Amino acid sequence: MSNKTILLYAEVTKENYLHTVLFELANKAHELAKSLDNATIAALLITKPGMLNEFKEAFENNGFDKVYIAEHEKFSNYSTELYSKAALDIIKEIQPEIILIGATTQGRDLAPRISSSLHTGLTADCIELEINEKGMLAATRPTFGGKLMATILCKNKPQMATVRPKVFKPLNEILKKNTEYILKTPDLSNLKTNVELIKFTKNLTSCINELDSAEIIVAGGKGMKNEEGFRLLKEFANTIGAAVGASRGAVDMGLAAHEMQIGQTGKTVTPKLYIACGISGAIQHIVGMDGSDKVIAINSDKNAPIFENSDYGIVGDAFEILPQLTKMLIK
Amino acid sequence: MKILVCIKQVPDTADIKWTENNTIQREGVESVINPFDIYAIETALEIKKSCENVEITALSMGPLQAEEILRKAIAVGCDNGVLVSDKKFAGADTYSTGKTIAAAIKTFCPDFDLIICGQFATDGDTAQTGPTIANNLDIPQVTYVKQINSCENNSITLERETEEGTETLKVHFPALICVLQNDKEPQRPRINGIIKAQKAEIQTLTLNDIGLSSDEVGIKGSPTYVSKAFRPENKREKCVIINTCDELFEKLCQCGVKINE
Image (cartoon, each protein chain N blue to C red):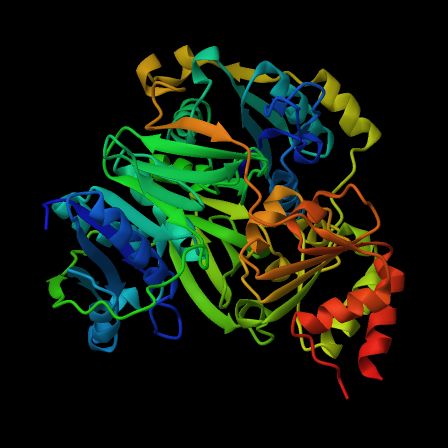
């Protein structure tokens, strides 16, 4: 083990489990550590007291060498100010080489506070991470509206990156380690928070989880034109037991809710089958669904880029094709 | 109440195409106001409607042409426009951009109450500049803001959307919020707004005005840099084009779609 550390942010969800993006980051971190003199893999856990025992097995099975824990009653709910203070105290002490954070709403809120305070860079939404020949973190992300891939280096330390859930795969076997737990008691006495949580309303219709676990997704884009188009799409999706997603274009037109959005500023999905209806296939969308096993595209424009990213395509009007398919499937 | 709205001029990403030489075709690409920032302006206008004595200043960092979007912001109801522009700011990453904008705000409007940004910009898509501005000003931030519930003299109550649900938060000023898009129709400029926008004097702040050194801004002040840029590769085999619905139905079945009996 070298004295270099790769630190991963362990997000605790409202339901009190570890966000699974941690295990995806852990798998990648093990890969990076090999090119970094077997760097230490550490997690940073900010939580209310009493949670650690619940998580120990997960840390140990995912090969964490160390876990730094900041515990406090005030950490029951996420707070930008309190969490960034706790994170910074620990990071300044251990001086990691690399920090990886899941690009969840919490991670995206927290990461820039940390990088800005540490006077270092932060590369958002990376889809590939490597250690280059100079031992630097080479972080690749879609940019320029997703039409260009850029590999970004950082001249300061720590080198920081965020990665969306589902971009990397978790370990496919248990990598048992004797994890060392280091408890830190943060000093929050001088810190007054200016943001109060008044209430939290849990999502009732959890279409987010539906998209995460769906084996089949039917997604609509601008080409679905209107509410009628999305009605046909939903009818088809219901018939085959698929979850419904949307492109940013469709969300911008008000045809679908933001949480249904798939793509660079929405969700990343990895179903067995992805059926893209009336989606032109801008790279921003492709990066969110390219991990699907099979892709079928329905689009009236034979030159739509979606066809370049599909296994099967049909050039035609989804308004005619979807009801026909629904009919064929029901009989 | 003083509200600052940070807006950005971005290339219309739908317009960007690849040339045959594998470079991005930038010529002829139209510049637009970042779509999320339209909602940042809308949010400020909504607050102005419900509270008294609200002054809205639109701020943009960018080349001189970005003046255009500031005038558009005034045309729909913002009171002033400030452009943060200097050749030395070019090539700034989010760390440096956030620092520069924060320094500009400290210079021309240190007594602001609320800063509103769009959650993302469509060109960089990082969602990092807003929080970086807040950090440099040492004020709290709330990201993923879906709607404003109410606004008082020194605080605002709003809803933040997360993967798991909706948080209702009370935020005391000064603070920064990053807003999501919503389904409300944005304001269209009115005639008197357009006239006001044409006449408005846009204040321009350069490096000399904001108290940073040239090493702290632009490409020099940016910890990150692009080492290479390339066209995304396509990992799929060539798409098989299907001609009939029957054939498509067959493919669906092959891909595991079950007939609903």
